[in-house]
Amino acid sequence: MSGYKVKRAIIMAAGIGKRMQPLTFQTPKPLIEVNGKRMIDTIIDALLENGIEDINIVTGYLADSFKALISKYPTVRFINNPDYDKYNNISSLYYARHLLDTDVIITDADQIVRNKDILSPSFEISGYNATEVTSYTDEWVMSVENGVVTSCSRNGGDRGWQLYSISRWCREDAIKLKKYIELEFEKNERRDIYWDDIPMFIHFNDFKLGIRVMQSGDMVEIDSLEELKIIDPKYLNM
Image (cartoon, rainbow, N blue to C red; front, side, top):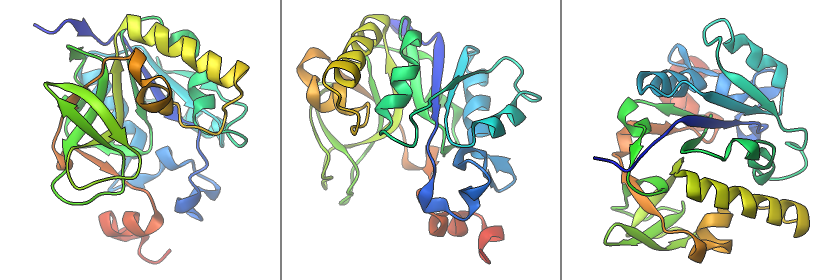
């Protein structure tokens, strides 16, 4: 039996999505339809199917556009990040830090969930979803021993576990994360970093993190318009 169960979700949806322009000039990246379904809908649907109903979306760029979700998902709540265009995504979690007081899942909004099980609420240890690296990747790669993350390379690698932007935090670690978010954002003014830098690098020794194994086809990350064209041919003429 798992030791913890997610009670709340934070979806990070404040970014500008520059690599998806011109599509994102008028539509935030998470609201772009891919094969007939908005990216963020795949996440919300999977959360709800897993019984996670306390869903909070951090918005920033074209924030009013997200109100279109209310007709389908009337219980979702929105948190505005007024600094989305000035600082890195640490600012989004900073403005949502009051939600870090329970077992929580944090995920980016600009990805497509194909297997709802990757958002399962049950977990044994705080940490990130990951896939096993079988060839070189320039994404963040973690080394894991006996189920515990021992290090992380932001320069990629050809062995280890690729970190994905889905993470679970037990209440104790969530409170700790909140403390360090406030320390780095307010006192140290480290506003150019990813929030994940805090547990993975800056305060790594203060967390004991594991991984949630998933398969590469369970989720799709679309980083550019060219990648979108491959997945959904309706965008080929853009």
